[in-house]
Amino acid sequence: MAPRSVSPLWGAFLLLVILPHTILCITSEVKGEKSSQGQPFKFLLHLEGSHKGQTVLGLHELKQYLKNFGYLDYNVKLAHSKSDEFDELLESAIKTYQLNYHLKATGTLDSQTVKQMMMPRCGFPDITNDTTSMRSGMKKHRHDPTSIRTVSHYSYMNGRKWPASKTDLTYAFSSSVSLTDDDMDIVRYVNSQAFASWAAVSHFTFEEAQDISSADMVIGFHSRSHGDGYPFDGPKGVLAHAFAPTDGRFHFDADENWGTDPSPGVIDLESVAVHEIGHLLGLGHSTVRAAVMYPSISPGVARRQLQRDDIQGIRTLYQSS
Image (cartoon, rainbow, N blue to C red):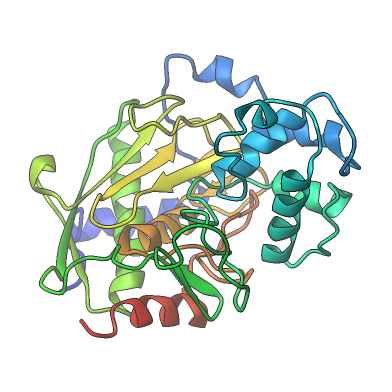
């Protein structure tokens, strides 16, 4: 069963006509203030060239960045996490990051690493439970070796998938910021297209539910702190995040410049939707730059088409289903 149409046939036709030039008008009470703050990852520019043994003002922000995306955990050494000292653990974390993104593993915050780190990206960590990287073939390290598994270039968490009996999944929409009726029609249409991409290569079907309380997955637009413990950071930072099965939450950052046309300065809504639905189904990040499950995406870029790595990932995860 394909995803249910979200509007009459004539409405869908009109959407197809206007989508290539549509930018969503999402209203947040403090959106103007947040937008003026600029790129959240801009602090990295000041740190470019930093290396082990140095103490550089602002390095604690880099440590927090790497912690957020799964690369760094000081455990009981909380003082080190808040310091501006470039220590051995930070160097190791940067090397792992560089390997994941096909950069030279220098352990130094060089210009290419800073450029990659500053790209808008998904908020889902590249490394989960600090057990392995998203890069194929790298050895597992630290803590429980059974909690995540890496195959080929994609990754997924053992046990974090929908049960075999749950193949007909439903979704609903609930946002804490305001969207116009026209924008909601576009959001529904774009997400139905994104779900259809995964339905075409998996055993799942997807349908919009009328009642949020009965939906398996809930999609919404939110700004900054929105109650899930993972606050958004404003434009050109973390674009969206979703939770692994069977949680079902999927959140877009309302402060981004969302649109349906991959043009300069615009984040492509469908590309991010397809990516986050992969997380809802249990996939982690891929190191393949063309893959939908690659963690970052630049404004003006569309990455909507599932690649072989994405398809292998979902089929391997549910091969016994």
